[in-house]
Length: 168
Image 1 (spheres, helix red, strand yellow):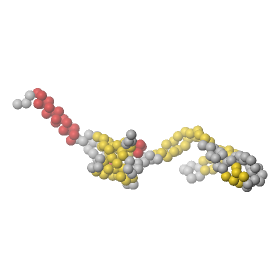
Image 2: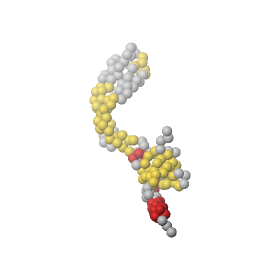
Image 3: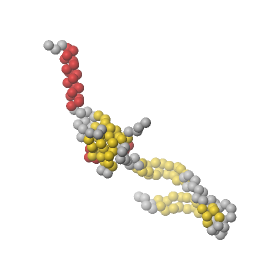
Image 4: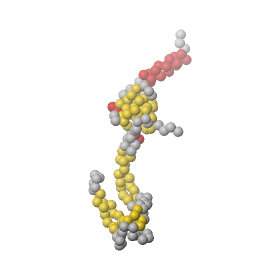
């Protein structure tokens, strides 16, 4: 004959088995074994293909718009010239192609010469200012050999790739 304690244990056991049978979301670890097509080996038991994977922005390449106001590092381009006469300072705009929308960058550029310019070296140190809203590509895609953490969807049909695992 069962007492109330036995009944409580039986109910808890049945509830635990019901939860485990429904396969609620759970996390697991995997290793990237291919990037094109994407394949991730999960805990050395199975290989997930791209059809089973849902990627977060943490593990993909993406573009981000940023507002910048910078000056490039000074570049020292020491080299020799044979020059007679003076150099001109030029200010104006450059037409830049190769992007989605052609655009112009205002600039000012000059070369400073030290010493005798007749067959001697010139100091061509300079930097450039750039500012405004710019689009940058963040190279955050997965690479072969990286370890990742995943969340398994209830039922186990899809896996959300959350992020890389960092070893400390």
